[in-house]
Image 1 (cartoon, rainbow, N blue to C red):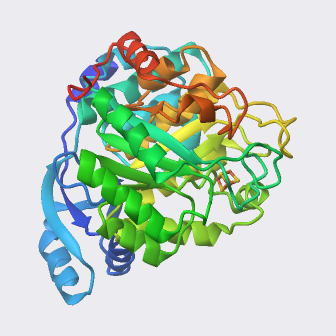
Image 2: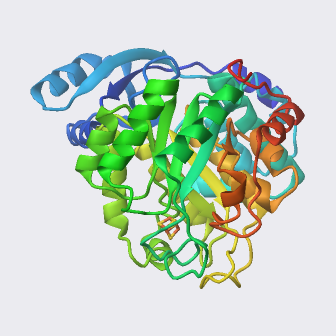
Length: 436
Ligand code: SF4
């Protein structure tokens, strides 16, 4: 019997998933149900059952009554329990099983096809894909999951880098406070007129990004956010670095939709090497706060950092799943002139693509940008990212005269609408209908 026929003959288990109101409650529920003897798994939230968390808890349908009772006795806030069938994609992925795959690698990919949860070791196995067959299978599988969960449209968002001042001194970053660069801050008027240009393109989400610049006080940010909402009604993402919990709360109340807070690496030692002014536990706490406050939360990793191992990338991916991060930006390390990391080699394109693909397989129902860093590292980097699981492109809409001054890394590619739409077409995908 051919391998694929054997797969089709296997039955599919019936399960339920529990969706919690926030990462905090998800983690509480995970601990509580585990300690009550219920066998559970953290899985990507199936599409169509809410957007509070990208991660849900799966358990056997037969335990549903017991789980409801336990939850009612607890203070855990949960949104619902839904009946789901485990996906079985083994027949649909038939052509992948015809590729020459190493047995260990194929076993892991079969687990993904059967909707089973991967261990860290198995994630490492996927990240170590090497042969042409393994790479093809990994990228194809990620592309298939992206198509199944999110369809063919590539979401386009626009970033305005409104200040390159920063009080922090991250060792890899071209904006670190010790860098001798020309600094700028955009006024509210300049920001609003740039947003108007973005609005003309039809783009619906604006990303307001800066270094950690306390000159933009809570009130100044609120004022800008209110004006954008009033004039354009756009979705707003803030990427301002670490702020206080109270500020995150106020920004949410005035209409901010998303918050991006990169962690870059969940390996504590690497995190400290990168961020001498930051603490891993604090960054993690901030991501948890953002989730609790109801933000669509973004984070991400740098691939190819000095001393980084594939095991570290596997831990990053598991972290994004556990914390239900909605938008996961993965890009290669690119050295910035004048920083302590300027002589380190740039990150590897292939490993970056593998990390994107594996993130799609593990986290599934999330936004994964084909990043500016990918486009900066390689010609066709954007297209390649879209072909291995990516579903977002970020346009750089910072005014032309300022763009060159926002060089987190050297030779940053300034992605405009034309570049983005060409990449979308080359990847055989669709530009959203909202683009004019
Ligand atoms: S990575 Fe962000 S916080 Fe760190 S120095 Fe650069 S702009 Fe500042």
